[in-house]
Amino acid sequence: MKTKTQQGFFSIGVYRHKTDHNIGTLWRSAYILGASYIFTVCKKYKKQSSDVVKTWTRIPQFYYEDFDELMKNIPRDCRVVGVEMDDRAVELKDFEHPKRAIYLLGAEDNGLPPEVRDRCHFLVKLQGNSSMNVGVTGSIVMYDRISKIPTELPPDHRFG
Ligand SMILES: C[S@@+](CC[C@H](N)C(=O)[O-])C[C@H]1O[C@@H](n2cnc3c(N)ncnc32)[C@H](O)[C@@H]1O
Image (cartoon, rainbow, N blue to C red; front, side, top):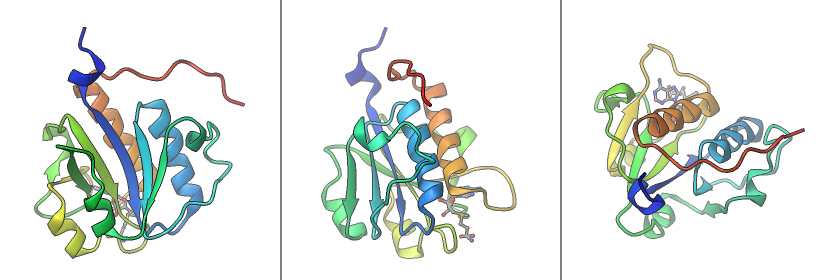
């Protein structure tokens, strides 16, 4: 059995999101699938009923003014994984997740801007010719991670 340190950790967040409802859905998945923290960049998150587990009460939620601030505050030896439909991106099914990873998703309308994509350590994409909902995409990425790197999940809760 691997210890938590050997498994590493991950966080997930969204750059300049449009709809708090989508983000609430993402936070719910993040908590259930074992994220260590969540964050938004460029726009604060207002709590939503879609986050039925109230993730921000269980794991830290951070806000970064911009991408530079995110990069200045990444934990030691952690890799930023941009999740975006980009020609350079590796398909998720072939992706080897870094042990310590920060997954960054883009806005519902414009996605991750080119200058942000360029500065991510890795880019990953899901199969398909059209973009998916941001919360759904993030949930699939996290599920792929915990399928490849067994992760200690939070205790079972019954949510209302
Ligand atoms: C609705 S999409 C943005 C669509 C935007 N119109 C575009 O084409 O750039 C919102 C975010 O979900 C994620 N996403 C959606 N589908 C994806 C896919 N197939 N592969 C990787 N990321 C995806 C990305 O993070 C994206 O920035």
